[in-house]
Structures are given as structure tokens and as C-alpha cells.
Image (cartoon, rainbow over all chains, first blue to last red; front, side):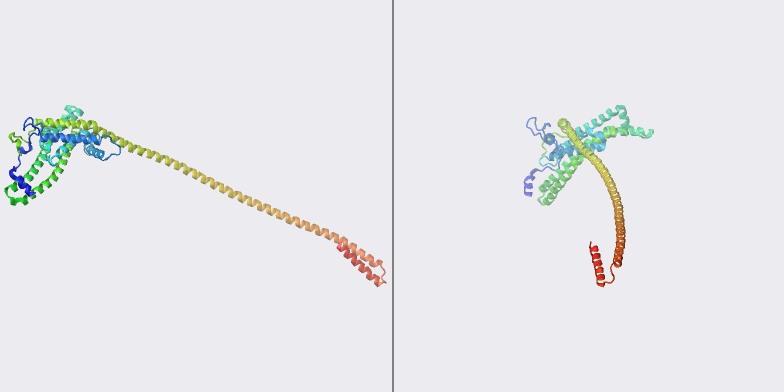
Length: 264
Length: 175
């Protein structure tokens, strides 16, 4: 392994930079800077296709007593339905369960690329994807709230907490800021930053190992340690992948819950 | 590695091309899953609940029916038991009655037989006494007549008379 590493060490860029997240186009036309067909967009398409194919195959002929694939598909949806949608929204959560389940699956599959060999980068480490999903969540919870209460009552519910009148001048701007400005931003940034940082960490420890070898062959043991750290961090990344997808989905459900509940 | 470094990207500024790609991919995913997969899952869940609840309901019905039957059987059994007890009691009473009746009848019969025997004995005895009395009288008169009528001189004839009397007596007795 070290021999191989020595062979590879010729030009290891270190430290990794933001530019490492922006890979060249993978189709020859349109030039290297074309952003339509990059590794990132390819991974998005592949994960979308994988989810669709798996669910359509697993649910081709549903049975009362499920087979293995049907069981996996059902447990995934059942988890979101019962443990997120119904848990947070009560009986009316069933209506939102399909969207929430789709959201969770999309995030999980795209996150997973960050530790899949060869892929090794998650589309969600580009803020465009989390931002788009957060925008949908934002539109969704506001739409649901306005639909239920009408615009005026919804705004009153969201902005005016049950507090003495003299603190309202302070509270209303705070509520507005947190509900209508920070929420979509924090949703997007939380997911993006986690995936970005995860990829960055893996890069640091992987490339760091090579960089140390390049600097001095005597540092080989530390390189090995660095690569072991990469393995450990990959496991941590696996946890983060599922955790962040879960958090994104739960927060979306929680925003919907806040929008449709009567009291603040 | 940093091949696209020619174009600087800021990590917190979304690329519009990627937003379009992500949006389209997510929209397709939403369409397929929310239209063709998850509603069918809800259907399956409902069918499963129906199947389970239907099964429970059927089991409940069967249970209640079984309970009803059991009650019915118990009632019938109790009834049969009372009937049997009644029949047994009746039989016992009847048997006692019959026994007593038979006893009474037997006693009456034996009394009757004893009484009849006794009466007959009495009658026979009286008849015998009557007959004997008549015969003894006749015999005595007969003997006395003979003794008086015969000559006392002839001892031999006397002896003969006695002998004849005795033999006559014997023959009378044997008669």
C-alpha cells in the first residue's frame, strides 16, 4: 500500500480547497465548465433512478404478507408515515407522509454518495440541492398554513405570540425573522454544511496521508493513522447521512405542524 | 484534481443549472412515488388492517356463538339433571310404596293362611271328638251289652267273646 502511495504521491494537492467540490463536465460537448452534466448531476440522476426502480419493482405486485423487497419499501414509507408524519402532525399527517417520505429518500440516497467508493461526493454538498428542497419545504408549510387559516389569520398565528402587548414590538420582528427568513436558510445550510464538511474531512485525512508521505517517507506510520481516521470518519459520515436526512424531514414536518396548529 | 479551478465557485451560492437538475429529478421522483407507490402502500396498509380487523371480528362472533351454545348446553344439562333427580326420587318413592304394599299384602295373606289352618284344625278336632264320642258310646254300650248278654259260666266262651270283641275292635280300627 505504501509503495502504491509513493507512486501516487507525485502531485497531491494539499490542503483541499472549495474548488475540489466542482468537478469538470463529464461529457465532451459544452466544454469542461459546463455545469449540466457533471459528476454531481449524474449522481442526482442515478439516485433518482435507483429509488424509482427499487420502489416500482418492490411494489409491482403488493401482497398482504409482504416479501423482502416489499417489506423494505413498506418499512421505509411506514417509518416516515408513523414516526415522523403521524408523530408530529397527528392523523392529518398521513396526507403529508408521501411527500415527507420522498424527501427523506431523496436526501438519503444523495447523501449516501459521499461514502460510496468512486462516487465519494454527495450532491448535497452543493448548496443548490438542499436550497431547492428547503424552498419547497418553505413554500409547503406557508401554503398549508394560509390554506387553513387564510392569509391574515395565518400571519397573526405565526407572528403574534401570546405575550403582553408591550413586548410585541420586539417579538414580532423576531418571529418574522425566525419563521420566514431563517427557517429555509437554516434548513438548506444545515444539510449542505454537513455534507460539505464531511467531504472536506475525508479529503483532508485521505490527502493528508499522501501529503505526509510526499513530504517525508518517515512519516508513513502517521499516514497510515491518517487513513485509518478516514475509515473511522467514513463510519461517522454514514451516521451523519441518515441523521441529516432525518433532521431535514422532521423539521419540515415540524414547520407544517407549526403552520396548521391553532395556537402559536 | 482541481481541474475546474479556472472558474471560481462560491460554496454558498447555488448554481442555477444544479437547481434545475435537482428540481427536475426531485419532481420526477415525487411524481412517481407519490402517484404510483405510496398511495398503493396506503391501500395495502388499509387492506391489511381490514384483514386483521375482519379476522378479529369473525373470531369475536365465533366466540360469542360458542358462548351462547355453551350456555344453552349448560342449561340443557342442568335441566336433564333435575329431570333425572326427579325421576330417581319418583322411582324411589314408588319402590318404597310397592314394597310396603307387598309387605302388607304378604302379612295379610300369612295371617289369613294361619287363621284358615287354625280353623280347619279346630273343625277337624271337633269332628274327631264328635265321632270319637259317638263311637266310644256305641262301643261301650256294645261291650256292656255283650258282657251282660253272654253266659258268664263258660270261661272259655267268655274268653272267646273278649277275643271276638277285640278283633272286632281291631277290624273296626283298621276300617
